[in-house]
Image 1 (cartoon, rainbow, N blue to C red):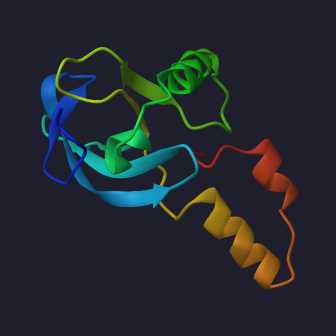
Image 2 (image 1 turned 180 degrees about the horizontal axis):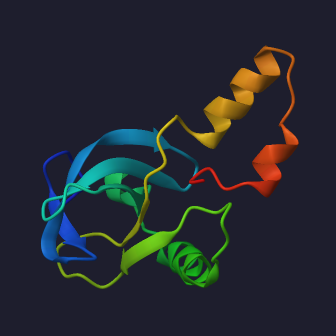
Length: 131
């Protein structure tokens, strides 16, 4: 299996092997996220792989597939859009390909606000970060 590493080409919205993984953006309890670039149009994406694909061990594919199913259904201006998913490729782990919003992770932005004694501005709840 092709483990996600910088330089790996994966399928994307514009075809097979059109998205190149660039660098890790972050890691959570359930997944690892990479910055990626579409080789056909230079668009930037965030690509999430389940943790087991990085660290080995038994995959909890059911949990990841549940996340994929939920993500496909959510369409809201304040939620990052899922643009492409793959769950059954023979040599590539499953993944979610999402729009990339620069500026750090949600956690890092919230931590920064808390450290400065601030709170989440009301506009974060009512306006899209894409606006």
